[in-house]
Length: 243
Image (cartoon, rainbow, N blue to C red; front, side, top):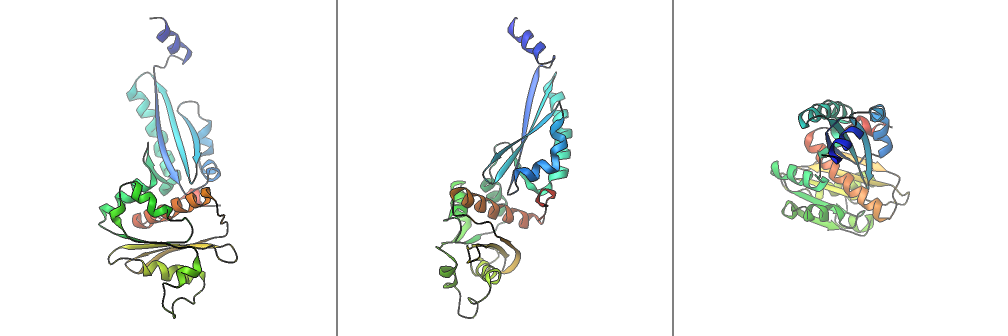
């Protein structure tokens, strides 16, 4: 009788506060801010960011007289956020990247082969901890590109780093499945991620920013999972990827 009316008054007369979290991955917080920065100046609903390693959460908070009214306020902002961020949004609430990617691979009745010299097995471990160990048919966690080359025949192990990554992705691709090679660092500190479906290389991406740290390995594992998701969805680019 005393405290609730006071709280309602202090909140501007609104009785309900509701939050919805959209989860993005493998794009930097600054890129998210660049794309949706103007929406973060609104009073109700409010939009804010929370960054984690390899991920950025977009939080929508609405205050209203009823839950239904709050839902309407959130829905309008969420629609605009999804339009702007596109495939960068991988889930909502407490969904994790390994859960979403594992479900997608499972729903498409695929298997996954992994060769990894960058994350110390983090990508495969993430899927295992999310309950999808049965999806991974090959998990080659190697020390570096030199060890990875030894798994190829003499004709195909002499290629440049991008070609080597592509060959290794094809090598670990199960029949009617997909294979991912996360390869590096090479002498110039470059790394490459290649993704193959049924032996056909669908994606080959390079980077020059490798660091041998826990956070870097976590980022690369998340990025690898996200590329799997994007390739399977057929949506490779988000406006938040652009520099």
